[in-house]
Every structure is written in structure tokens, then in C-alpha cells.
Length: 305
Image 1 (tube, rainbow, N blue to C red):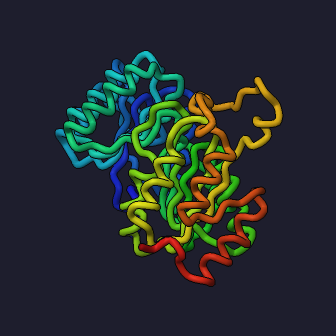
Image 2: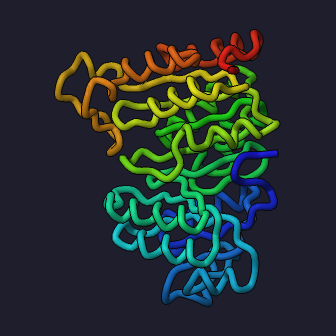
């Protein structure tokens, strides 16, 4: 069992003829993804690494089932591309595009909710199931992803695309494999938050623990803390909140668009405190994550209600 994607997942790539999309489509194929088509308006009839290109999403969905679309289109075109995908009945959108206007994202998420679709991103790097498949550029080329990720019981949710792979590599070096890694996206408004994905992790038999990589700004970590306090979880959770240095360097901005600190509750320290109070183990340094995980897995789950 895996989270969101599996070896049977039928994937399309919107914006497939773009330079970066051509590269990560090849990497996805090399890693085992089942890419059944791509979309670039006006370029139908071509192919990318053997994947046929169509002018519209509907041209693909009218012929076959599509489970997920990876959107790598320019920000001004993202809303219309996502609307097209949702209306074509694709149940999962993984949006790589960054700097999408907030109003456009809000409209995409509203339509997705109305149609029963799930959105990961914007500004996501994708999803990866070690030894199985991936969607998006997460992990890089297949050979690099194979070194960084290994099958195992630890799920990863990260607001930083790059740190998703860094954490996986750290765990792999310590003999802790991963079940699924999800790059959530670093923009202020995203489709699937930590708390919203928790029920999926709870039902995933292959996942026995979770690692969370958070950042200053936004309400995701506080929302997760409330979820844990109210619902509990069978899964030990180890969290690391980046950006603690910001509190000692006033005026310094963290890298992601979503990392805008609007009050004391948005700081790294406040988020770490809230997660600790909700039962999560919080690492002060990335290097502590494997030992905390080993401790949590060895002692069972302290979060269950």
C-alpha cells in the first residue's frame, strides 16, 4: 500500500514540452512512473521520451483513465490548466508551478473541492514512493533518487522540496527507509496541508512513523498540532522546524513565499512548542531526526488518544 500514488498510477504531465518538464518526465519514466500522456496546447502529435503529446487533457481522459496530472505550466496559465484538469475528472493534481497568484490558487482549490479532486502544491516538487515510482522532479534523476530513498516504514511530509530528499537521504544512511515522501509546497496557499493528509497516513499500513519538515510562517504546523491534540494518531511523529535563526536576526526573511511570519504564533519556536505539546518529538537539529525516530519506533506511540 502507498500514499497517493503507486505503480498502477496513470500519470500525465501538463506543460510536458517545456525544458524542465522534458527532463523530469524522463526521470519519472526511469524511476518507474507510468506516464501515459502529456499536454501542451498547439503541440499535439509530438512525443517526449516516447510519451505522446496532446493539445488538451480531455483528449487523453476520453481515451483512458488518468489518476494524476503533474502541472508544470507558467504561473499565468496555471489556473486555466488546473480548471481543465479538474473538469476532465482527474482526481489528483500535483502543481509544481511557483509564484502563482493567491487568487488563482484559491479559485483552483475551490473548484477542486467542488469536484472532489485533491491538490498537492503549488510549488511542490512532487511525490515519491521509494523503489516504486515518483511524480514530479522530486529526488532528481532516477539514479540519484535510488541512492537517496529506500523502501521502509517512515513517511515524510515537507514544506521544502529540496529538504524532502535531504531528509530521506539522512534516513537512508541510518537504515531507516521511507514509505512515501510528499513535497507539500512552499507557497502561502496550498492544496493539501499536513493535517489534511493525516487520515491518509493513518490508513497506510506501510507507514509506522512520520517526519515533518516545517518552516516559519503560515498555519500548517499549528493546524497539525490541533489535529493531533483533538484526534491523536497511531504514528510517532518527529518534526523539525527550520528558521529558528530568524528570531535572532530581526528583519531577515526565510526563502519560501509561504514563510511570512505575521505574528508570534508563526515563529519556529512557537510551532515547535505547539507540536511538542501535541505529542510530537521535535528535533533541534536535522541530525537528531534518525535517533528520535528510532526512539519513537522502539517505544511505541505516545500520541494515541
